[in-house]
Amino acid sequence: MIAIRLALRNLIGAGLRTWLNVIVLSFAFVVIIWHKGLLDGWHNQARAETIRWETGGGQFWHEAYDPFDPFTLEESHAVLPEAMERLVSEGVLTPMLITQGTIYPSGRMLNILVRGIDPAQEIVAIPSGKLDTASDAIPALIGSSMAASSRLKKGDVVILRWRDSNGAFDAAEIEIAEVFRTAVPSVDGGQIWIPLERLRQMMLLPGEATLLVKGEEAALPAAIKGWVYKDLSSLLSELDDMIKTKTAGGSVLWAILLLLAMLAVFDTQVLSIFRRQKEIGTSIALGMTRMQVVGLFTVEGAMHSVLAAALGAVYGIPLLAFQAVRGLSFPVEGSDYGISLPDRIYPVYSLKLILTTVLIVFLMTTIVSYWPSRKIARMRPTDALRGKVQ
Image 1 (cartoon, rainbow, N blue to C red):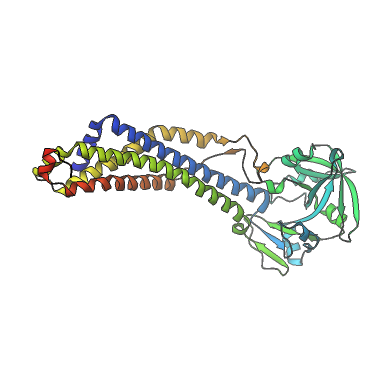
Image 2 (tube, rainbow, N blue to C red; image 1 turned 135 degrees about the horizontal axis):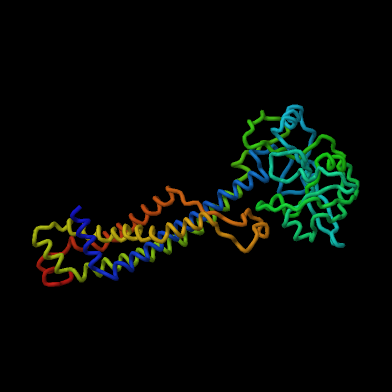
């Protein structure tokens, strides 16, 4: 306790030199917590939106289905087994049928995926209820990104061409019943949603589906032959890997900030030891052991991080709290880059993140303070009193 009071007095007595180090360290504190909180917030929101719009609580895929290979769509569908049909009727599962198609907006040709969805489903957030309309044209839903690329809007009618299960081409008019906005590009870009039964009739595939989405709170059905269950960890693995990559890239920024702050503390300690050699010699001559003096200088260096944490809290807490409430908007849409990017990201600053950051900075500051202080253990009191450097 005496060493802490003495170290604090020495730091305050150092004046501007101390506060420059404290300001740099506090800046490192705030930036690291802000950046990591922003990534955590993005991750949480992207997962929640992907679950709400696309994955639900999990999915059953036809064993031949590969979302990265459109050529598998011709074979990746089958009649639903009786057990699945029962779960669909109970609202536990909702089936979807996927095929390739082509639309011709404004005389242009645009290849798309046509996805059939039950208008009465409530498992995913696709506004499928808008498809339950009476019209000569086939009602269809598109996302805002698809609307921008195709230059279609609500109420527009466009020709859709597809090939049925027998390989014959057919065409019909579709009417855009609604344009929805989502942060999940995998349900938006290059896709049109139409009623499931209508697509089954068009494809000559009565009662068939490509995949089924399970409700978030629904119990997991038993394994069914010909269908592969994909849990959330599998469906969200691509998103999780992207966030891990972003975190790894961000760690470079954190390392640079910490190195700059540690270099300032290290240089300050070296200068302090050089200028205070007579004080060190006097302390040893009066009975302090060399290790006690080393400990005093180490505590002085470590106190920089304590003061920095306090200063960072003064301006960091209001700033980070304001951003956590208001969020951070981006001038680009995630669908333009094929990633799930909400319009506004709300950072998440967990207690674990704050404590871990404080602990890491405190330990690093202590280490770089102890390193130059080891020289004191090799100093002779008589040389220190005369101001000689060993």
